[in-house]
Length: 241
Image (cartoon, rainbow, N blue to C red; front, top):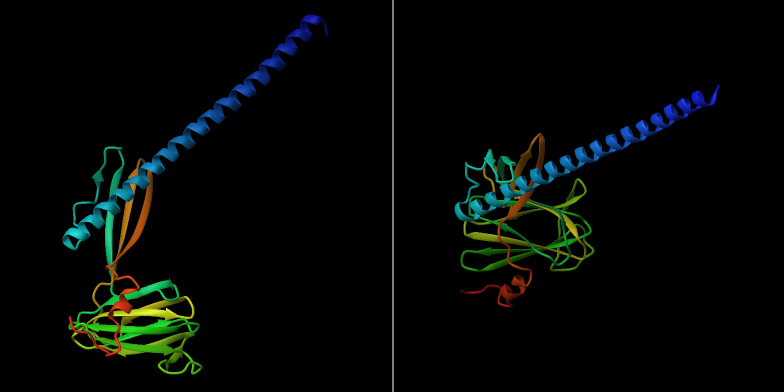
């Protein structure tokens, strides 16, 4: 092969290499652009979902409902609050309640018995406050190793279970785990009657382009801090307002 032919081959090889590099760079640039666009769409969708949550929580505080005008609400960013829904929870369910912390259940006089379930590793102090601010206390554990005032309760499916009678004038039940953290559930044990709303789960979906993202939060009723129990308790067994 003469020198001119070799030069042509070299030029072709260089052209192929340059073209390959150029196409690779172009493909990488397009991919980066697509990823950037997808990230921006995702961020806008999340922001729209969060905006739906904020509006719903505001409406709950003001009116007691999330309202009906949030669905398909356009935002200045170009995103959309696609859907907002709320679901009331009439039972209190916590995956983890820390030792010596307090969970609170609202009562309204419509149920006559409440069922509590928690982990056997914890003892439970239950305080019931009525409309006259009188306090009734129960102390329970799933075995007989503890002395009074702790009473022994049944173990059902690996959980401590206690059914507590309540009256039409009882308004608040507060539960405090002792000795260990625990999961806990509190529900009505009265046929045909539920506890009042204990929390509301709000779900909001935002949309930007073809991207949708969903955010979910749980709004609980206001709870007095743990030290509130020590303020209410007295040696006489009851308090007057």
